[in-house]
Image (cartoon, rainbow, N blue to C red; front, top):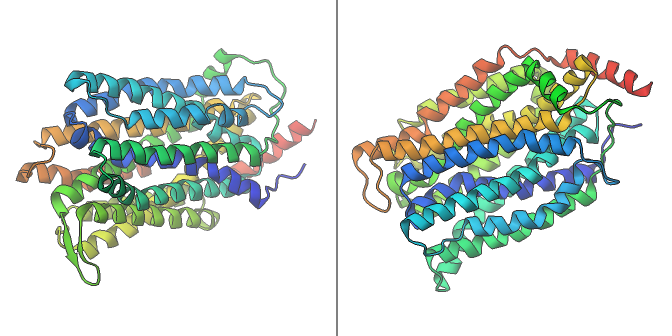
Length: 458
């Protein structure tokens, strides 16, 4: 059986993250400010909500992984979920960005309910989607290629979203919609697109890797995972990376609205803060995408582990520098964004490729394969990092005295600046330090793959 994947199938796999990333980035970059400045929920309440709902949601990831591992259909274990959950995903996306007039307490309860349900359907489609890469091929280089296509799709979805959201919101505002309605109508467009692209991933991909025949035992799967030290290392590194990303993403709108403000720029003239923020987000994601493209050649030359550590150290150093940039130095703000974005982009496809390696390592070590469970841990690390990052953002905004839609104090502006620079830098540094003890080198994985393929051929 050939492990080579055709370009159409790689593109189809990338479509899945185009769909989910539109919403991931909507949640990361717009949901906090939507709740504080549009729905008018206090940042501390939003931070606590993010913590409680996402902690609960994080528990769903390994559960979904276990369910997916035990799903058997003519179309595979993981692909069918892309079709089954596409429409519920779209519906909950719209409801999450809806704001019924239920009063202050009612709005908070509504936010808790809809956001919790949104994260459940996100898990139900994203864990199988992530796991799918592990059964499309057993070739470690092809997996890195698939991971790169995945993140090309992810960043393309994010870029499309950030480049269009400010203009769609303006369009609906100018058409007479309220601020809350403008968000709802805008998100409905992305929801329909997400359902379409998830369906395309289902149609264009195929599951090939068959696990060794074994008796299925949830208890045994969990016991094997608990003994897998490399899984714990990647879990820690992944959480730290997502804290880094979550803090940066969640603070961008606040940084431009309350610190940078509108700017008069050469050539462009007067540019409103929201358009600057949208451009910053778009540049961030474009450079992330370029970093994704660099991941394969960089890891081929230096190895996945060394590439990961080096990229995160670069992101950390330049994030520290970001704190001292003057708000009128727009060129420097965007220049640092390019450097940090390139470094951050390199890391993310490596994480997914390394989780595929960990699934193989687990099978090689134990004779049992639990792809969905292993990959669900990556989704769990994303959500845990996102959970902590989102909660920290809300709590620190409150702690530094942030007031929505008002002139900020010196202290609250300091907090906003720290949220986009120093605190993310600490997360990036931690991820690099954790990965120092990771031991699955590329040469070691070549040996493992050869031995596993020999066993599967028996």
